[in-house]
Amino acid sequence: MKALQGVEGQVEWVEALRPTCDVGQVRIRVAAAGLNRADLLQKAGLYPPPPGASQVLGLECSGVISEVGAGSSWQVGDRVCALLAGGGMAEEVVVDGRHVLPVPEGLSLAEAAALPEVYSTVWLNLFQLAALKPGEKVLLHAGASGIGSAAIQLCKAFGNPCWVSVGSADRLAYCEALGAQGGVVRTDHLDGLSDLGPFDVILDPVGGNYAALNLKLLARDGRWVLIGLMGGREAQLDLAQMLAKRIHLLSSTLRSRDEQFKADLFSDLRLHVWPLFAEGRLSPQLARTFPIKDAEAAFAELATNQVSGKVVLVIDESLV
Image 1 (cartoon, rainbow, N blue to C red):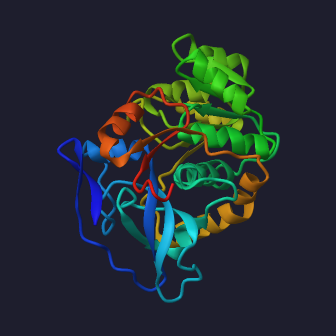
Image 2 (cartoon, rainbow, N blue to C red):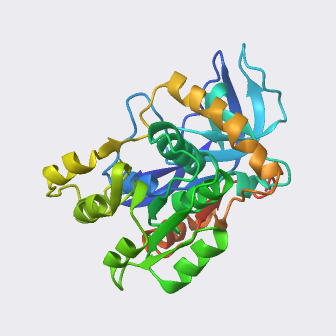
């Protein structure tokens, strides 16, 4: 089969070994794969897959099940999307059947490829780890990103007013159209967020240079959830301020979690989140698709940090 691999900072569509389908697993004929910042990092040699995971790029995909291992309840022909530790940007992928969800009613396979990673990340970090309660105020840094787009919609669906920091006025308008109460453009003045807070929860993919600001903006007993380091890995914190406000600093990654953890997470998504797509309360926010032959352009597009929503690579045009 063909698969996309990062080679010396470039991506190449090359021949790769076809994985075997074992007990509890399913084989998916891939239609499309979502593109994430983790893929940019892996391409650059900065984020290798966990031990035992595929070296092929791609943490989420959609497609049609073509083979079912013993013990799985899925059927050949089912239209699904999947969360992966790697391997999604390929003609086929084999995955634990518990890490697979049906394509929500009314969505295309291209749209479905944009769902697993971002909705898993948001549900895990806001609703499980931070234990977000209805009515609590949320701040989303990088609010127009794929994760931000999902988080705004979930906050709206579960009764949490949210605000954003973004890179442009257009992206702020995009977030407000999705349901954000408002926010600031980071090139203007991030301190303007002080007029909108304090916040009970901050979802932070930036880290480093936003650390002091986050402490200032959080309410007493606030939860700061760190999920990325776009702003650097080092920060100087006023620990007295953390003590005085009783701040909870939580950090999380999803890719390296074990199989059972992801299975439990997907079970939660199927119960609490997936029905909202059929109700029209959530949407994929697919910004742009690229054919697999233009993968390098897709990676370059995401690297601009100007994408509002998700970028998806189309692997098999006959399916989407």
